[in-house]
Image (cartoon, rainbow over all chains, first blue to last red; front, side):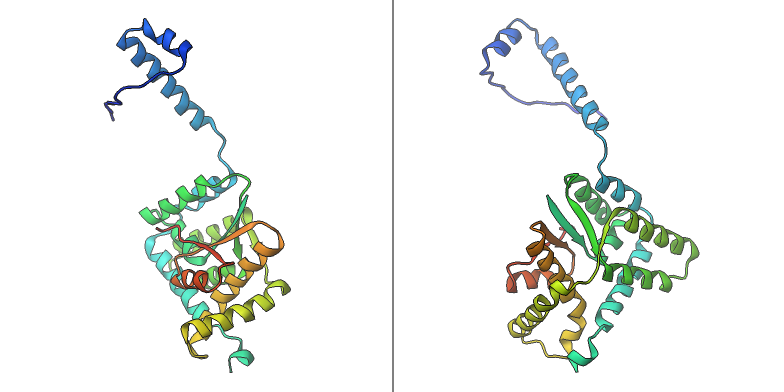
Amino acid sequence: MQVALNIGTINIQNQDIAKFIQNKSIEEIKALFLNFLSKEVETVQQKPKHKWAEFGEKMNGLISEETSIELKASSKEFREGFSFRDLDR
Amino acid sequence: MKRYILDTNIVSDLQTDTMIGLKILEKLKSLDADDEVSVLIIVLYELVYGLHNISDNKQKKAVEQGIDFIKEYLSIIPLDMKEVDIFANLKTKYKQATGINKNAIKRHNLDLLIASTAIAMDATIAMDATIVSADAIFEKLTEIEPLLKHENWLR
């Protein structure tokens, strides 16, 4: 997959960055930007998964859609059939 | 730091490889590591009952595995004395607000119990407790009882 980016004008307020970027060619700036993005992606990928993501990944895809419907039907039957006999009499 | 209490419909949908399942997965991934995810003991009752109703052996094994993951990763909230008064109060408010008769309200007893547990937890452990369910009754209950927090992760 390829993505073409057209991100318009970036206003640089920081003097040091402005000075640094001033004498660079467009190609150099593009390379810097891509280098920065690939480091960002690497960082995200290296970030350890927390417990909830791990749980979600283990659960997701375990059962078919039909089984999920059956589980929900059993839950509905269980929930609607439940009563506190004395209280609801 | 928040506590999310997952309802049976959310746990069931999470287990499917569908757009809905992936949506719930993404939501779980977006939580903070120090958040808490739980289910009420009632959800386990329902899932185990559901397991017994499934005839396909392969699917049965998969549901069993899902129940094991729930027990391994999530905290299971038991019923407690703390929600007794909250339940009675909430049920009365619901009856008054909706005009539902005492036969029809029976089918909501467990929903009201789940809602009462969330309200009780929220009040006693000073930790935002939110019910995650696609069931419309919880939305209605938040209108009646502002202390109840509810999210529908399918939206």
